[in-house]
Length: 266
Image 1 (cartoon, rainbow, N blue to C red):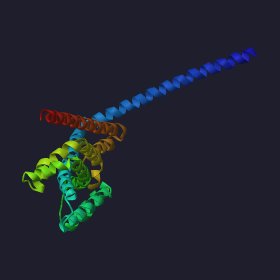
Image 2 (spheres, rainbow, N blue to C red; image 1 turned 45 degrees about the vertical axis):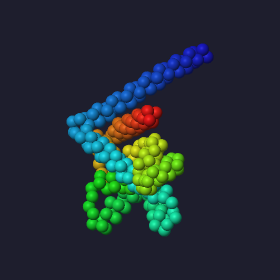
Image 3 (spheres, rainbow, N blue to C red; image 1 turned 90 degrees about the vertical axis):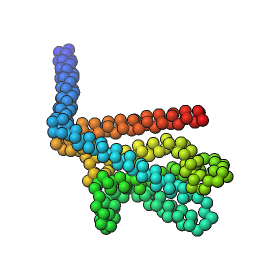
Image 4 (tube, rainbow, N blue to C red; image 1 turned 60 degrees about the vertical axis):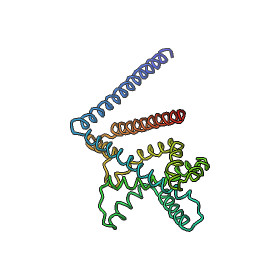
């Protein structure tokens, strides 16, 4: 009995040693495989000009997002102004209905569907030829305008109505009072929300490859296809998006502080 017990204990100890050695080898192989994946990524990124595609994709991503935000602010401000105009006459009511339909249309359909419809249906029917990046800028601007219109409308309504009345009292018309008095104050109130909209545009640019636009996703997908390994390229892509969002958030905070300081001085 004692001999059987000792033999069993030896087998258990040997089994534990073999198991620990096996686990150690498995970890080493995993680390080695990850190192090989990084080497493949660096090879494609540097030696096969993968960085050129990444820079092009980053440029297109920022161009689409910034242009879309600018178009969205212009459209959104116009729609918000129309929707806060008093509806005593027939024309303001008609314009308000058109703006409401526009907002419902672009907020009620996915941006991928909007890209596909504009690129493959509407623009070809009108005989207009645009590149994938140009179509993306247009669609992102129209889509963002629907959201920013509601943001801007809430910002305008947050301003004291007495501000508009004061402008009218000194002889300014409705449009001049809105542009010079109400809208500048509304922008200060909605600045964080506009920053969130810009961040959303940055992240949504990952779908522009559906219309042939070369963004960050296309660039890193190219690297992954050539290296037959997608883990490292996609991790780097995610890291770039995170850095972009953090930088935008930092810029918005700095702009908010500067606006608060200017208000205190005034």
